[in-house]
Length: 440
Image (cartoon, rainbow, N blue to C red; front, side):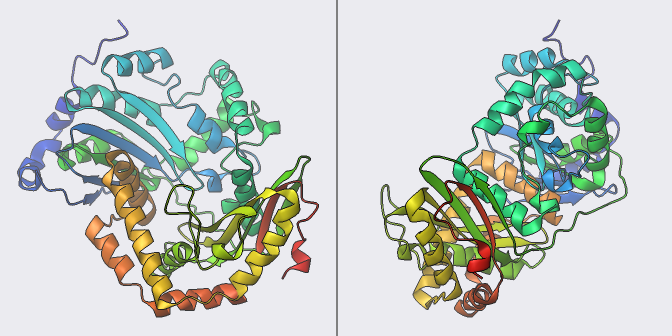
């Protein structure tokens, strides 16, 4: 029967293999809402928090995002996301769907430039079933050719739904980094349906390894999660990180119509320089990361200069070793060109006061603490930190880091922006948008 579960419960078997030897430590930590981390000998990092949450959420995270693609497998990370839930070595796609539906659970796969995350959410009394099919989906892919063909329409639909503003940000990354971080999180339309089983299996073997992985959980006992991580049987492989250097260039996608979107940025710090990275994030909120009230004005230091003719927002994208800081504008094609010039002048002459910094810090804290308040996003954040940083910062530590940023720190990164070179990504009717050579 499709609904049958293993006759030897996985968690009981894990305990029998000795993973319950740390039960005393688990009892001591039970009830604590502080984040806990454990690094296994294989370098896989396990992180957990909120063990008393009513719903158990567990993620398996791999550093297998689009930055790891090469010319031979471009778009593989998008296919990997779309293929979550297909047949595996131990379960069919129908079996995964049917069994999770029967226990009211869900399985999702998300991805970005650095990570692919598989997450299962189930009530605690069905955790065993959830973990069984999470393991199957994340570590047992087989990529049957006919199933890959079946998901091609889904991939093409994803591509067709990309908003023009997101396309501009993707073009900005291509202009700024060319390869690595410049690889789009979306498969190119001409490559949809072109990825073979061999290509996908090779991509998984190279990137979904123990030393590039993390397991995170919310509503799950930490030692139980450690046992689950040890039972995955993932192997380590030679680490190969795809470094990305910033470039000053532009990517323009000329199209018809009456709208345009343009993203402009210069280099920012990555998470390997945590203090400066947080300073850039504070600066983003001080510049204007969006209105704080419905239909309100976006009155940041930078965005207030645009007026009401276009939609505009400060932009800050940070990664392990690099980042981008700038702005994005979209609107009527005839207004966007002038807005780009206005925004660049504003970037080159940023004047950030102590009050602006205080407002920026308050905005960052509100956004971060609200983000971490929801268990679904907390589970994702734990996995992201564990996979990329090898450790986890709790809410109190994050608040302390943000509060530790001084006005001088933010003003220092603002001066770096003023002297930095620019990269531009533009999509739409670009008749009014100036070229980069006329702006630097």
